[in-house]
Amino acid sequence: MSEAPEAPFGEPEYCGYTEYADGVVPESLPNTGSDATGLERAVWDAVYEIEDPEMPVSIVDLGLIYGIGVRDIGDETEVTVRMTLTYTGCPARDMLTDDVRETAAGVEGIDDARVELVWSPEWNLSMVTDAGKESLREFGVSI
Image (spheres, rainbow, N blue to C red):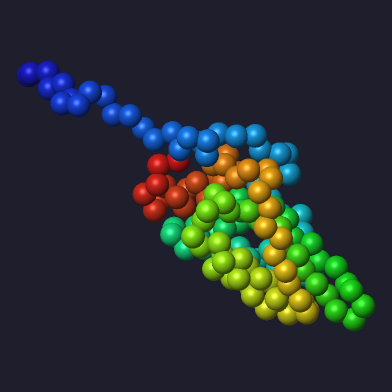
């Protein structure tokens, strides 16, 4: 039996995603709302259904949602969703923030919703949940 031929271009190199590959992840991230209750839980559940526009992965599992806060203001209940994007120039920025705002506002018992877009801490692949990593692999993304 003959030996396998050498690869014509050498050994394959794998994408390192530059600065997105690894990074510092605060202890509170990724946040999935696992300890949320009541209206906050309902908002987490609703937002979990929003998928990234390029991949069939929940934005919660991607680690884009940093927190959800619900508060009463007079006779109304307002929710604020603090989130980030995978990078500042994301072409889906308006679409995603609009989807999050509309989805959160659509939860029964919520009167008003707003999205607070933040850039710190910077998103990186370490913020993707295990379920998100599995979904990405199933979609064909090496992670």
